[in-house]
Amino acid sequence: MSPTGPNNANVPPGLAQAAAYSWRILAVGLLGYVLLSLLGQLQLVVVALFIGLILAAIVGPLVGLANRVMPRPLAVAAGLIVFIGGFVGILVFITTSVTGQWESLAQQFVVGVGQMQQWLEGPPLNIESADFTVWYQNGQQWVIDNRGELFSGVIGSAGTVLEIVAALALALFSAVFFLAGGSNIWGWAIGAFPQPTRARIDGAGLVAWRSFAGYTRGIIIVAAANAVFVCVLLLILGVPLALPLALLVFFGTFIPLIGAPIAMFVAVVVALAARGPVIALIVLIGIFVLGQLEGHILQPLVMSKAVNIHPLAVAVSVASGTLLAGLFGAVIAVPVVSVFYAVAKFWFQTAPAPNKERPLDGPDTEPAGSPS
Image 1: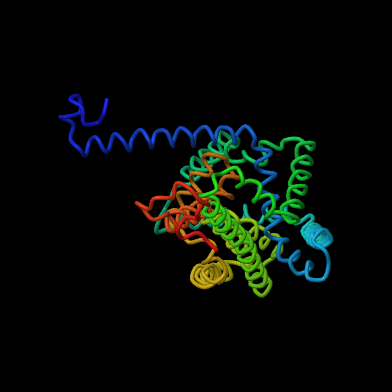
Image 2: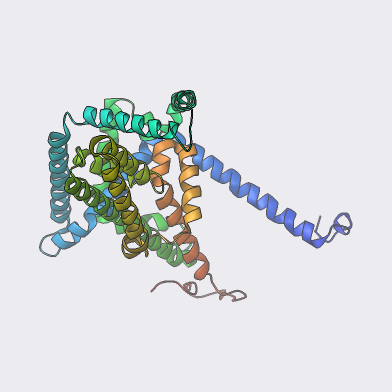
């Protein structure tokens, strides 16, 4: 029955429009739920492909430079060899440098927390020691109860050595094809869509890749800058375990909003235990200055073109990603949201002009606003 029939005559137009939007929203939500459930079942494959995309984003510039003087296949091989060799070399250097220091780092952290607890028990707060015990036990129990969710994703799905090796092999295999013929793969994929929409889909894919690659390269630069700054600061102030603490800051930066502050808090606590409150205060001030430089200079300079989403959206994305996929979800939340935002913005800005009839005969025409 048509919307203007007698059964709908008394329905207010606003309610009818809301109902029309509601069932469409429910349909889209159901589709999204099904897709997320499917991705959850194929989590190992998704993680491997994601790592492959990261490798392609990082190694891509190296391959582009090498391709100027050698064929594409050799350029891909050279780029991957240089990257893997450099990555393994860094891992060996870090491993040999921090071996045996992690236990000392944990001890220093415990000592620093104990000193902070003693100060909080004194004036003006006068917090009772029993309260700290209750808070510690509650926090420990929460971590135990939620360890599956906190460390799900990569750790949960790749629980065996065989799965880890398989995921890394698939990631490397995917990266080789992404670097050697990513445009051909993308061209084959969009060939399944109708001819009139291929130009817009092609443009959306280009925007998505630029956003993802820009974020990946940018976050590595920001993480490295944070780690170098913290390492130099701690070495100048004579704080022990500078390299392990800088390493914590580097990896913590990959979890937006919360990762780097938590790692830097550990550095302040270790400085408090090892060098006293004055040095700890200097470290805290230095970290505050680093946060200002990162937020107002480094991130806008490095990542402004790749990530253009509101800080509230970043916070909600990280929280949602953590709830949905644990640690892995927290890491990928911001790049995924930034890619979707960039694609949606491009898609609606290049929408075909309304009320423009296409000819009944003749060649297909490209939609308005499509990239040349």
